[in-house]
Length: 209
Image (cartoon, rainbow, N blue to C red; front, side, top):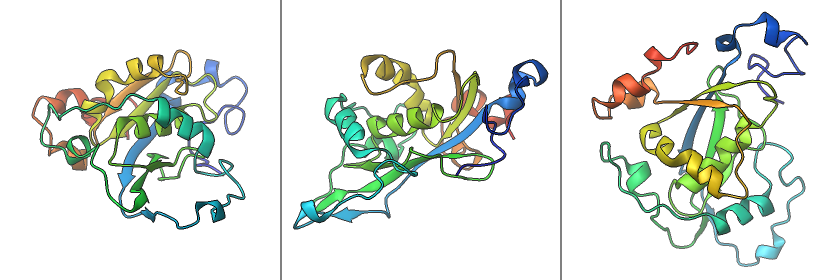
């Protein structure tokens, strides 16, 4: 199940939607964030953790995600904006925890979780984790949609090399022709440098709201 208000070709759009609707009206509008309250301690007998529906609902499929994480290059960067904890503490490890938190992509309209896009964190909120969640979300029932507004509290840092990370990966994919408009939500934008405002404010994004 997913948001009935989000445009989904073949689900809630007419067959001639590409000719009838202006492109700004059928933009995807997503929000990405992490949560470090959903932690998981190391298990004494990991073999007892048997999944009954791996990757069939809102979390990603574990083996494909593990392959992505094991092959991704860890970006050890400091924030070039303000002292954003999500960036500077991305590689901080936490003992005794097999999962330090989760990251998810949701629709900006009604905060509905996008199927197959919730990921586990092994350390902090690393780009490799967020990238996988975003790519999974962008490929969910989006055939023909050419634009996405993506709000993320550290979008100014994340978007810098996102497409390079996609091109360098065997496990990340963005729909062909998809234009990603990175933005920062209004609550978080006030904690950014002044230079971020004209580039990442939702006030200046056509179709936002």
